[in-house]
Image (cartoon, one colour):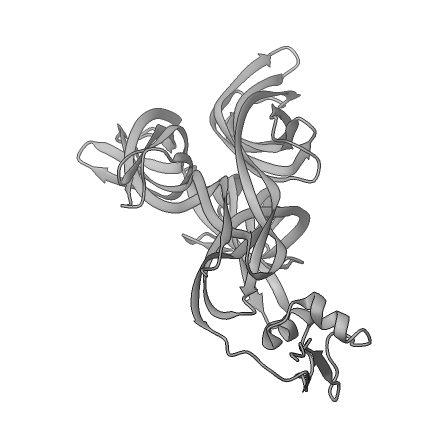
Length: 492
């Protein structure tokens, strides 16, 4: 008689694919005499999955500060719409695409009567969709049941504004601004996902004939309603600045300037729910051999966010030379990048803090010099996404031609988590087992065997093994014996 089985199907939602792509945006500016700083930022306005591709689109902002032929400091800014495609034959339209872009490289070239700024944008694309697997739930078998963990994903999004106002001294003209988001708190509460952190606002401006830079850390809070949000869930999120309004209101009588800032923020998040599936992870038959087919799958999620702040310092690498005749005026466009590295002393976040150093020479001409400060910071995580914010960066020329730099680094380390499910999905019956006619069998188990492993070797249910050997302890110790009794019938 064929073995009867019962199966069930788990249906959930999660990350199916991770793609990376690149595209370039470019804009032409008037011919300049000396480029001082260039900056680009970008954000997506949408991403759509199709057959074998993901199309993503958005807007980039390119800005340049330069000296003209008369050594006047000028600025120019342009917005560029972009659209790009990431190809992968595994993509299908029912997937939900979540993407973010970052400026990976920025270059300037002169061509004819124009200056061209080119930004290389890297896209990080996660694709979500339904996933399912069938598993054995019961039947004419001796089965081992285990709660199998699956991480279910719930996508959420929201928006907010952050405002700030402050005195900026005698600033006359804002030349350039840059924003970096530092997300320090991701808290899943009953019915909502709370995101909180700071936006580092860096501003380059003129004060009389001098270039000056200053920064502000603007706090923000975004509360996203979600029916899937519940205490105990974990979440990840990205927050980007989609628009920045910076208004300078000079007060000539007081020789001061009040800056008003309004930042528009957009957030996209994913809440991970831990689901326990009561599935069969192993099985056997007491009467015949069986061949098991297993279904395996990984689900991804996140753990806690670990935050730390470190002050780093050292000798900076420079893109051009300078000497004591150069007056240091401003440190602007501060940024940092880092990766996790496993070393003999443990895990470390290693990377580089960067900025543009603006100097003015003895002849009155200004120059922009790129400087970079490498760092290595010990961290107490094993696998995580590293996000780092550089702020408070300063530079001093103690020795001629050399710059000593300092920076405050704020790290947010979002720990990654994977749950692996391996369950019995199909059972195929084989040849019948030969019956054992002896009334009593004595079996010498292997040391370390658990109850299930022992029962499977003996072809008896765990309940039968325990009933016949009530003093047996698990895992089995070396030298123990297992006695099996079989009922015999007497025929007259």
